[in-house]
Length: 229
Image (cartoon, rainbow, N blue to C red):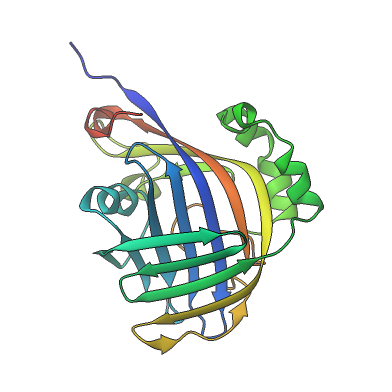
């Protein structure tokens, strides 16, 4: 039987993005449900432009690392503990603590979106323009993968992924403390300049968003991706 030419994978969880006064920008993905189970990964871009992925397993490192652009990928223990409005994260050399505030008008609007609607790629497509206008740097859909960044018409057998983000909540981050290899990264700052991992960025203003992400893997690579739960 021929292998399927595409498969859709779904990730439900949260994405947190913040800058620091040292120039390091941090993007954290906390996935409660995914083809890999529950996991957390962290993407960092340092002040000098170095992009680093910290992932908890070789499988998640391969999946995320092949979709986005990094200079270094490290497999390290990653733990995220969330209690009320405080997130405490350890990821190899990174120590991060962030506090969220009350959702604003946009957060209330997104919170009212039914989960079944937010999970549909068509919803991400519909909200693409509003997201770009309201949240600088944010894209709700795009093509990811090292090959497709260079060549949109990937050859058979190359990795080709389309991705949609459906937001269901948005809360501001009001306080951040972080260190890397024991060095203090400074106070909270805007995510500026925008991070350069993939087709989009997080909002310039530090925030935590609840997200349903759909990843469509096409061509021969689909046969090698994890089976959706």
